[in-house]
Length: 317
Image (cartoon, rainbow, N blue to C red; front, side, top):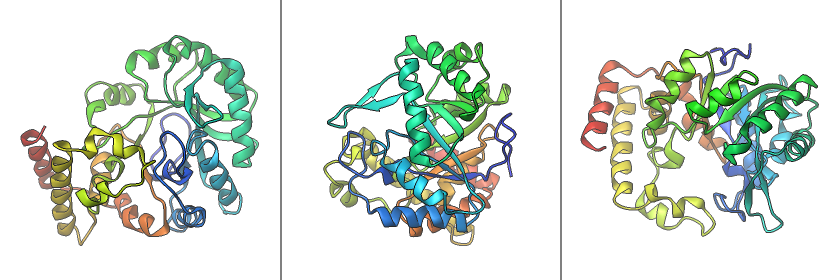
């Protein structure tokens, strides 16, 4: 299994993302979710050999962490659990940004309770906002690590300059960036920086939030729940939507050459083919969805596959 940067942790190349299982009714929800199906998804990744789960307090305003904590405490061996800080919420479930020490300490304490653990394996700064406070927030997290409440520290959605600023205070052990064939921008500067500095990378949304699963259609987009954040995203509207669905068709074709792998598995395998990437965070809301992507851990794309995908990217920027 790949080493996660300099953390000393070995992790599977795929981990479970739990944004969607936070449910609906909040600003960035994915619509309604059945909690028992969520629990079944977490149990299934464990059965399939995946050994880490990524979550955050903001996902469902605490609900995702609660579900993860309920299941993980029953599993042997216990999966690694990675969570985040910096996003808080108001009484009406509106998300706010906060990197002040008192807020971060309260967030970590609340996460420990929801996750039912004394020490959190990895805590990541969810967003570098307010930008002026990232050093102060990072110092606070380093103190919590020194106290044994957190094992490792990482960042999410940071650029190179921001990683250098906080890295001068305490090492950045991991980075969680968006990375997929839908959003490849971090290839240019951020991933090379992480690789050069021994920072473990766990990429989120490798399937483009569902666009590259091979099961998304224009009709499905039109029928999404009113509180599904994707309804507001330009990638789920024309002219981008048709481009992405054509790409998913190509990935499905490539998957057929690999014994019937799904488009989702090809999309994740493409992310994992980048040498800077340690693992991919793949979201699932049911055990069946887990079965649809787990093959990405062993899928190796050929040079021909990669050339075909690159040709599509060139022709359809």
